[in-house]
Image 1 (tube, one colour):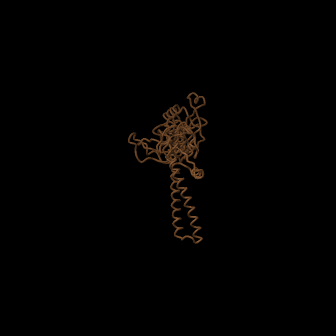
Image 2 (cartoon, one colour):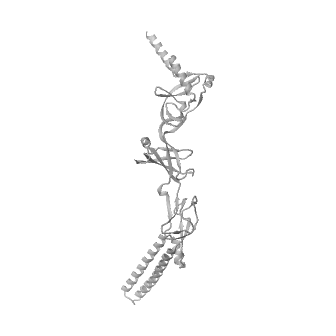
Image 3 (cartoon, one colour):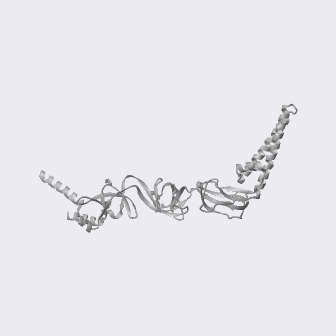
Length: 362
C-alpha cells in the first residue's frame, strides 16, 4: 500500500510537469509562426498617457521695457535671436532723459562748489580766522548737495543709464538723448513688441526674453486617474530622448475639462521642444522590483492568470507572471525570471491553444 501511494505521487508530479510544458519540434514552431526573443528589463512601470504643454518657469522669463518715454531709434534683435546678458537690444531717443541728465549735472556742479567752500572754510578755521560754527554750516550745505547728487544719479540709473555712462556724463558734461536697452539675462527673444520709429510711453514693453535651459511640462491628468500619479514619477516624451520628473500635483480640478494639473521639470533642454508646444507624454513609476517589458501578444491569460512561454530545448515552459503596467501594445510584468531566458514574442495564441488542449487530454 505504501509503495502504491508513492507511485501515484510520482505519477501526479510527472503529470503536472507535462501540463506546464509544451513539446514542439523546430518544424512545428515554424509552422505555428512562433518567434522568440530576449526579455527586456525596465526600471519603470507605465501609468498612463496624457497631453502636455511646454511652458517656461516664471522666474526664467523677462519683459524688457523702456524706463523713459521716447521714440524707438534702433532695434538690434528680433524674434528667435539668442542674446547674452548685457547685450545691447535697442536704443530709445528720449527727451525726458535730457532733463534728468541736466538735473544731475546741475546738482553735481553745486556739490563741487560746496566742496570748495568747505575746504576753504576748513583752512580758515585752522588759521583761526573763522569760528567753528561757520565750518559746520558749510559742511551741512556740502552734505545736502551730496544727497542731491546721489538722488539725481539714482534717477538716471532708474531711467536706464549705467554707472559708466553716468561717469562719462560727469566727465564730458555733454547731454545725449539716446537711452540704451540691454538684455537682463542670457536667453532667446520670444517676442518683439515694437517697431523702429514707434513712440513709446514710460514702461512700454519692447521684448519678451526667456532662458530655455529649463522648461516645464504642464500635464492635464483626468481627475479619475490623478490618484495614480505621484510626485517623483518619470515622464517620457513622445519622439524625444528627453525625459522629465513630476514635481507638483495641483490640489484643485480645472472646472473646464475636469483635469488635475501635474508639473514636470525638463533639465538640459536640447532645443527639440518649443515653448507652447502641445505633446503627448507617458507617466511612469520607478520600479523597485525586477520588471520586464514585452508585447501584449506574448502574454496568454487563463482564469485571470497571465502566462508567458519560456523556450526550452524541447519546447516551451508555461510560466506565470504578474502584469504591473500596460500602455498601448506593451505590458510590464514581474516574475522570478532573471532576464536571460528567451520567450515566445509571437505565437502565444497557438501555444496557449496547444497548452490547454494538452491539459484537457490529461
